[in-house]
Image 1 (tube, chains in turn orange, green, yellow, blue):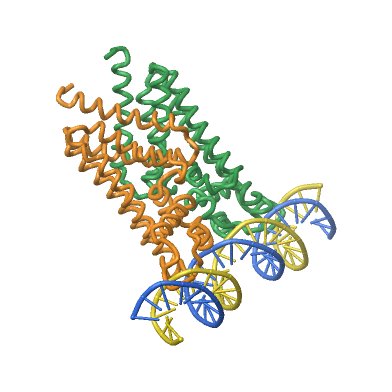
Image 2 (cartoon, rainbow over the protein chains, first blue to last red; image 1 turned 135 degrees about the vertical axis):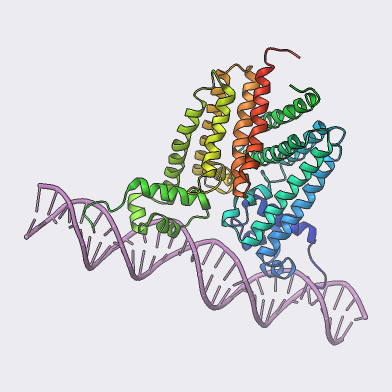
Length: 199
Length: 199
DNA sequence: CACATCTTGAACTGTTTAGTTCAAGATAGG
DNA sequence: CCTATCTTGAACTAAACAGTTCAAGATGTG
């Protein structure tokens, strides 16, 4: 059983990512990673790097995979900001609804652990959150909202999106999550409806 | 140095609570608890119980302390729902602004860890979250919002409140947090303004 | 065929953890 | 003064963990 790689790198990285996603950085041991990937400890070490390196690779992988989906959802923000934000939340809601994937959000979970993580990993998590906010800010500013309102909504949507992670970890129902995002979507819709009508 | 208790139980419990709050259940060892409380391992064991018991006591303590503040904030929801919700968020924002206290929220943090916690502790965390939602539901239903809108806002406010915990752990600024709650407060205000004006 | 490449299981070190027990010492109250 | 109560430091078991190394075996390629 040798001479060529015996495993698929993408499959192994996905398995590791899901393990970290489920149990967090501190809650995942090398044994857990070995079990999850089906790889030997030595193979993980030589093929995927040490625990920190592997975790950062998984964070990047996660950010890229779902970041692309968020980008796609927000691409029509200029002309249809409400639908764009709805689609943005749908990316999260669909991920939560997928029984193959753990609940929550790897980045939100890592952010929550920042005070007890190594500086390098904490910085990585902060950057990922920052990119998410920038994405939203840019998309909403490109729409027809006044600058300050767009800023506030960007922060708000990012925060609500994170709260979905917390709620789903605690077993919230799809109806509960829909209620949460519904208020935000309605508020945005309202803000757009009244944008040219000074009170 | 004996014959009478050498430490103040409330002080010790507070210290343990803050330690769990900062580092989470799994991230806190008996040594950490010993350091935080200034008590010997044996003293913790004989006076505060084992790790699980102590954690549950800290959860209850936290829920009671801040639950009371949330109750007080929501007490005027019947006549001034917007101000009540604003005051509700202020309880969280003031806690976050207090440099003596860790960022985030012990209950939100525990909820995030539910998939890797023991069933007993997970149930306790879920109950605490449920009480929070019930509180909000009751307060908003007592106001002048239609039932379904009140339900949705209750879920939404609870979720946004949790997101403040995530954001503050990641180092969000007060301005960012204010923007997040501002959108929610404005949305509630708007919902009340249009409650008798069918579109 | 031979070699380079890869996988694997096992081992070892050293640290940390939870949980528990015990004996010695100090003190307040009767 | 004396005793019940409390504190303390230390020790111990047993388990889990990260990190690393190594030798043995399998296999594809030249």
